[in-house]
Amino acid sequence: MPFRSKDLLQSWLEEFAASGAGGGTAYVADQEPVDGVDSGLVIFPLANATTSVYLAPIAVGVPDWRVTFEAQPEVTELSPDDVYDLCREIANAADLCAFLQRKSVEHMAQLAGEAPSA
Image 1 (cartoon, rainbow, N blue to C red):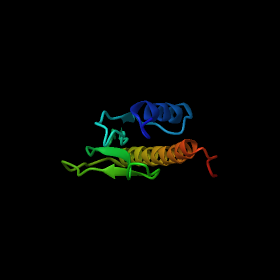
Image 2 (image 1 turned 45 degrees about the vertical axis):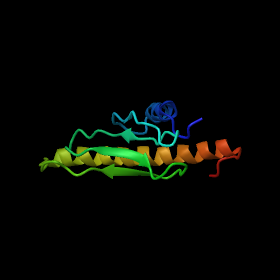
Image 3 (image 1 turned 180 degrees about the horizontal axis):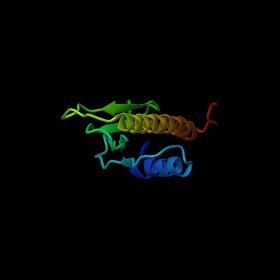
Image 4 (image 1 turned 135 degrees about the horizontal axis):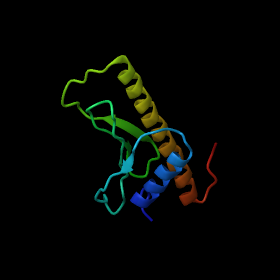
């Protein structure tokens, strides 16, 4: 079974959304498998910025995830309220990234036949 299949990541996103742990409309991107293994890529659209944000594991077989902010194509000017909204969006992206990392650690432990560590 691929380590991070689209179906597995989608189930994790649904679990995160059902927990009420944050907003956002994150989705799993369609990607070509690398060496037969899905690499995992989650897009996290921001409503209050023009930059693209995505979440991805740092390497195949490693449970650590990172949030990546791509270069912004244009200047963004925001009101104070919009900045607060953007901060909430970024906090939600961080929460989702931490959740995906925890799920990856648990998943790796299950694949190895071990109990996850606390």
